[in-house]
Image 1 (cartoon, rainbow, N blue to C red):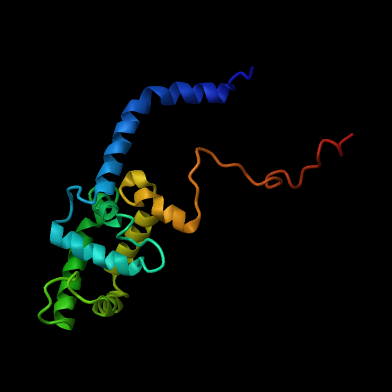
Image 2 (image 1 turned 90 degrees about the vertical axis):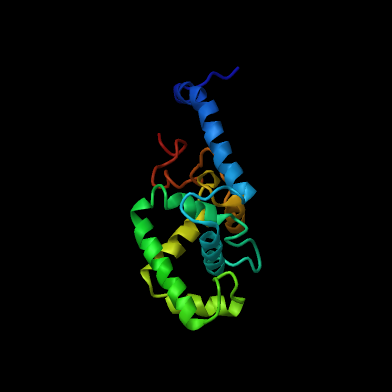
Length: 188
């Protein structure tokens, strides 16, 4: 019979009482992201559609899942209300400039979503050097590859795309940390 180590025992003592609370929080976040119809806190529906179209140009779903498939818009929405809230005003200002640029490039267009793929690419080229684009690209990549509990990376699509397997702990490859230490068989 194997006895638990002190570390395992302490971990279980600290985590077990929190499990129902953590499970409820993770379940809520995943349900909102998976449903795709979760209420937005930062965006209104038309703006969310336009931002999602831009994010899909950053990580397109051509030969695999894209930003839209992974629910990146839910991550961006949550980020701008929480950890990236200090960038929210800049995001709104930058998006207003993108809308203005869209109107200049494509008079008569009503939204970014309504543009053709080629027009969306042209719009992305026009804003590629802006601070807004840098922020959008960063949030899109974070939403695609981040932990699904934060609202993006639906069904771990981003992780599957890069071959990442989530585990509770990781081990160093054999010899990684003791390469310079002689083995016990060599020590006399």
